[in-house]
Length: 432
Image 1 (spheres, helix red, strand yellow):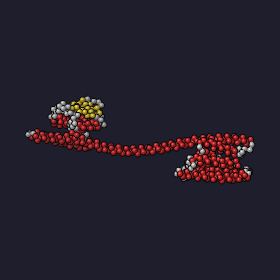
Image 2 (cartoon, rainbow, N blue to C red):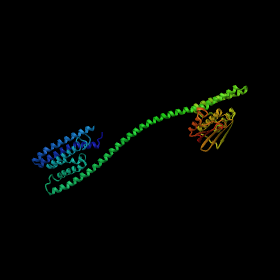
Image 3 (cartoon, rainbow, N blue to C red):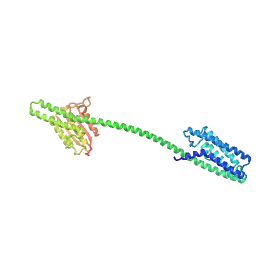
Image 4 (cartoon, rainbow, N blue to C red):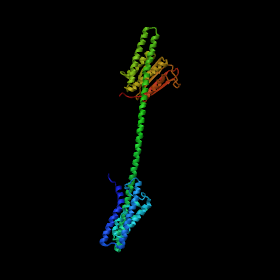
């Protein structure tokens, strides 16, 4: 598994002080043996301060590991900060101050201990509050400049001049790198915030997708139920417009055959009843298969209406005229079937309820819509009276449902004793 930059820095902050203290101690001891950089008192003090620095680092390392364990990161890879250790900022400031003081004292005794003191450059931003981080960097710069200029305190004017220049250089570089580190930390925080926001957005998106899936399932169920209900209404309307009307005609013809004394007239009525039975059986089969009416199988809508009106007039004895206005155009099968069914239902209502002596059917091609008008001079009715709709449950309701399926309308004008006019309008739709 690849090691991240954050993990590398955390390892450095944990083990770096140990390594730098060890390297600085070895080099300082070697330089003292060869050059006698320390006297007996300084050597004894250094022998005391090095174990103290080691003990301080062990104490701090344990506190950082306890904090990491509390954050469910027992490997201690989290970068220690002032807020991430027990004791908070005060504990971190105390550790940094003690370590810096030890580094300064050791460098005072032997310049090579600056190798250990330079750790203050790296973690001042992490361990100290913002107002104290610059102070920590300046103290570290003093220690490093003293080491680089030949030791503390400077031995002469030249050493003091070198110390001043090196201090300025160290302080400037530390501030520059501190500024760059702060900017990088800000960018890292922004990236972390962006990643967190993206994670939240992804969570919201997943929740929305789950909700959409549930809604889609509900819509599919509703669409399926609506389709079943629509098919039931279609079959009910087809049965009403074909079987019910056919059976009504058959009953009428059989009654006429049995009521008259003339056998020849009775035979004519029986033949008509047989024709109606065969026609109704064919229409029933076509309705089940959702096919167009048999009248439209070989004829256009005007011709099918002309034959339907003629057959109805012959059967009922009502003086009926059929008229076509406008320029005839080929129609979509569904449009033609809908208008034919509406005409059949309107004529059936006129036969059963109107008691009319004259009727008229007009098919009008009006450019962007087709209009069908069926009028009679029968007894009429009051359209707003409760239960006044002729044709039972599938009379006007069925006609309107058929027209609305094609974004059309059906209107009825009627009054008691003044006849009835049914007008159906549907948008024009050409043949596929």
